[in-house]
Length: 359
Image 1 (spheres, rainbow, N blue to C red):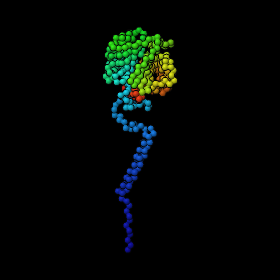
Image 2: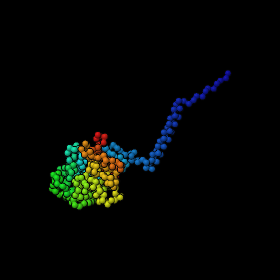
Image 3: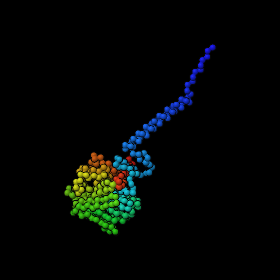
Image 4: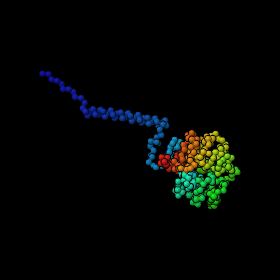
């Protein structure tokens, strides 16, 4: 009788599972190694900034608009050596509060509460200024009244009543009730210096700071030939420099003023700014082709009111800005806009709201 050898049984199900798991583990290990090597190479050659991977975004800094790398991140800005520029939303008007350092401030213009695109509350406006001055000293060290239009100076008498203003700069203005009120308030401000620029001569004043510098430009021209509005053409311009960055404030300057500025800065082919405060709320008669080509700004901030009857900013002006790839922030879209610049040139825009929220 023959006997058959029993058949050899295959591997058990448990053994198969172990081999399959081992293969999976090995595959995962290989993929992890590949990923780590790839990450190392990307960081090594600057494709990825490792700080982007480890930074903490839990802190609420408001809406940060980083349209390009040049705009930077707020956490990269050194707040201990930083200029903070607040383009305050005052509707159809201008008011810019600048924290030059921890105890030095500058106010350029103060809007008013008219009905044409002015939907802001002046109590909210002054509360905002109060909150800034609490951390930057109680005084306004420098005040610039760019020109006597009501949407730039109507609240200045209240500013003089409410705060100590140490230095005031303005042109010799044409008579008007609003202008007289501001001039009287500036003259009567105790322990203060008033500098009036003569309309017959142009003037340039430089104000050095610890890690910044300011240059004030007054055309002094008593109405440029061909200018539609003398008060606008006489607008004072101001240049702020910090960390190699330049910000140019223009009031309601018109084309003639812009051409004067080009000549005053000697047609410098290397002239280059970073941020332009758009003149005259983006009107058609400002931000001319020659001026925009000369200043070579990367960013622009415009102050205008929702539903203003002037239709500011003008579409042609926006097209001139957009054709030069200038990123534009407008207060009627973003609310109050704050620009931070430190002494190393790191900068960031922070806005009160997004355009979507405004709509």
